[in-house]
Image (cartoon, rainbow, N blue to C red; front, top):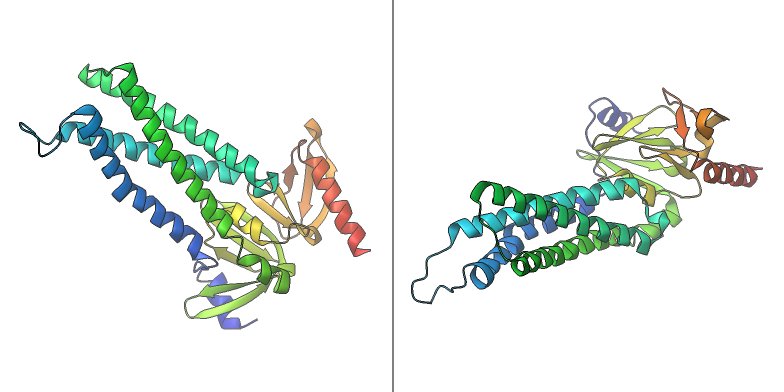
Length: 289
């Protein structure tokens, strides 16, 4: 491996741009929703449902306060659902199935939208003392829920789309090209001991001890790119190669304590995951014999 590239990655800790298109696509969608869709939606709701007048009608005055209030509703719900989407993506994996994961995202969106809408409505009521009819509240909620669900589905298909171009290259080479400034380095999957996630950054640790900072949007994205037979999701924050597992033992509450090469602390497999972990490890052992 090129020594200059190694130093640029491991010593300067420059963030490797492994796949920026996923994050940029989601960023564009988020900005599009916040800058265009939500303000237009707020204008429509204000004029057709709340204020009840259009600009060309007699006595029209722009309903600024109503517009700002509905805009706050939309932007708040957009942010809550974005956070929920990221949390659900971090907790679950595409390995549970495409439809079950999509269903979890949609349920999260419905609950997040409804809870945020109710909380803001109660806040407005407490501040202003003004109320709307039940049918008006229901109409607002249905419109906001529909827009939020469409946004969630678009996020989801962006994630699915990120898998399509990667499959041929992954099956052919099983390697990843990491960029640092004007330098590049090629890391083979078999050289990766484990991938750990902390905060909003992931680190690839190779068998020779290199620690490479990445800018993947989540550990789920990394998991989908790696060979599912060779790597196992120990917990929310760790993907490990089977060759990096030194030993494991059963501890209290039916969990497993796993010793991993190059990992500073032992990791734990929950009782719900341990059967799948043992089966995966046995299959890997059988392949190597």
